[in-house]
Amino acid sequence: MTRTTWTSWPSREALSRTGRSRPRLVVTWGVRVGLLTAMLWNTFARGRFGPWETALGLVGVLGCAFAAWAFFRTSLEHRLWPSLGLLTLVMLTALGAQQAGAELLALILWCGCAVVALERLPLVAGLPATAAAFGAYAAVNTDGWLSTAMSTVGLSLVGYVLRLDAEARGNTQRLLAQERAAREAEAETAALDERARIAREIHDVLAHSLSAQMVHLEAARLLIEQEPAGEFRDQVLERVVAARSMAREGLAETRQALSALRGEVSPVEDFLRQLVAVEPAQVSVVGERRTLTAEASQTVRRVAQEALTNVRKHAVGARVFVRLEYLPDEVALEVRDSGGHSPGGGLSGSGSGYGLLGMRERAELMGGTLEAGPGEEGFVVSLRVPA
Image (cartoon, rainbow, N blue to C red; front, side):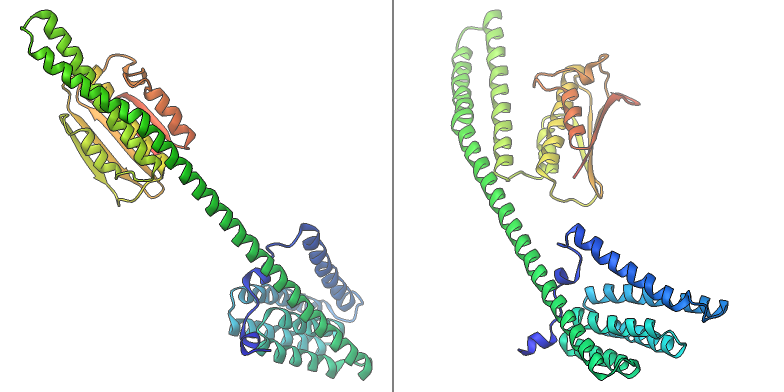
């Protein structure tokens, strides 16, 4: 064996219950409970001890059980000296039980310490602990040296086989975890590739089309402006300018969607400031800024757009206050204005075709909330989504 083999711990996967089947766990705990019951019955149910001695013995057994549980925890955490201390405490308890006349209980405790030391500790510490436990077992066992030797060798093999079995199970768990991580990475890569392909398709079709429309609308605007002034000319010019503005906004939103598909989303607070650049609005950001999930970021952006669209429709000229707050487990957006809304305007559809009612459904699908209604002065839209 190499030096590493002697000094290394069994892996955490090997020492934990992860990967053990339910029937195996049931059998293991059944054996433990049955063994403990047999020990208690053999020790205390024969009337050899008085009430106080029996109570003291039960307290000792419970303390020993707690020490064993603590040993399993400390060995799982690879803490050598606490593990050895707890194991020594159990062996000393076994010595006290033997001195009190509970020989079977003492023998079982010593044998159990020997097996688990070999199974769960580094060999450089487990072998001496196993030797000490078997030495105490051999010193008090009255079945003869041959029986003692066979028991010692057999239990040593059991402990080592349990160690090898646990290591094999731990290696299997690590391989499964690595395979699962590789599959998730592969799926994520495939999803990113597909999103990039969709982004290219949208860019080649929709973005180019909108850009071409803007060019033609700008050319139409220039031609119309050259015509003599008149009511019909002014009406046509107004429509063309509005159509050009809508095409510009559509192109900007398309580019934002493409950036989201490619994972190149700009910070939400920057988007909000750009969104209200031409509005009589004030933007405030509270909390420690961080990168939001794609869904949360898109929801905040769409709700802000929809809320500002409603302000333009129902409270023309009102001042707008936008507040973005980063909370520990979520993000909150509040958009309120100083004007008045028409009844029901907040949840009606807007020019975008996706009103605040749809945004509320979107927020609820994410586990968040969206509330819209009259405030102290004007109308308030409040969004909270996990992020």
